[in-house]
Image (cartoon, rainbow, N blue to C red; front, side, top):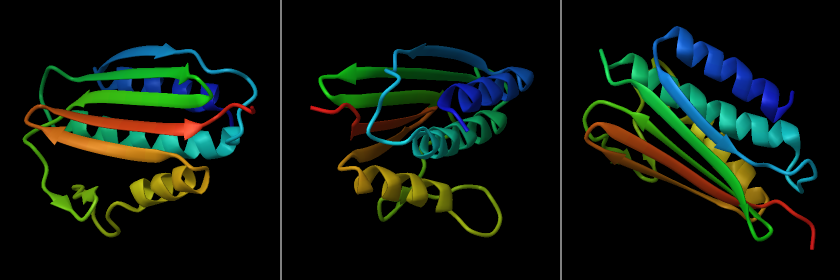
Length: 138
């Protein structure tokens, strides 16, 4: 699985749900984090963003920004959401049945394994996911 494939599939899914998607991504080919791991992280975050957008009738949007900052890959995503979510530890509750936050835990674990970090922020009407991970050699 490549990051491009995940992004393309998720963006198509979002657009089918009438979600306006903006992507500004400039990612080098050679990263120290594997394409599969990056795809899992970004895929999980996008799934959550799409789910949050589906819960609101209009003003649905997802904005993705990915860029290299020195030898770190910086990722930021802003999506529309309902009211501010309550945190349980470091994670926010989801509306899914069954296991909650598993995707986010997996994303956090992958990033931490590579010396990176992830941060989530919930406000009324918007949710932000950010991560920074060492991505270039040297």
